[in-house]
Length: 209
Image (cartoon, rainbow, N blue to C red; front, side):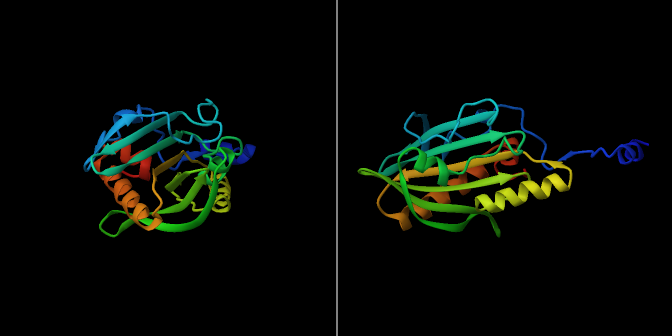
């Protein structure tokens, strides 16, 4: 009866690709990843419009420190609903907005477990004497778009299917002049972070627990 009524009135019943996360993610993401230990920090490039309630529902900003290794900066920005006006902002836009030049953008896979990997993007950002190596992924519902165009297409596809996606930006970066070494280290870090998270944390990061 509900389906027939909706069809008759032209209404579309919308469903969720992933159940929205309503618990504090700060409690679901590990403070220790391998030999890195987390601390709060303000020295992280924030997403454009970060903190506005109409874009992100939760944000986590940490630096993970380890003896004998450069610190790793982590930023997680999560929104329960993605639409035309509420979308995860990609780092290729927020870094230039903060005065950085970006170069050597490449698509890679971040290994999680076994044969499972997450499509991600790696690039080098520089501003004055600061050189930052950045690795991130965006999850939109059950897809991992690797560009703004892919993200736009994924959102339109979900809209046609009557699906309301959630969205998350997972970004790790470090100050280092060696992009190859940093890329491998950041990839390993994000893989360990995902495995070490709770089931709720993995649901947020990966769309599955």
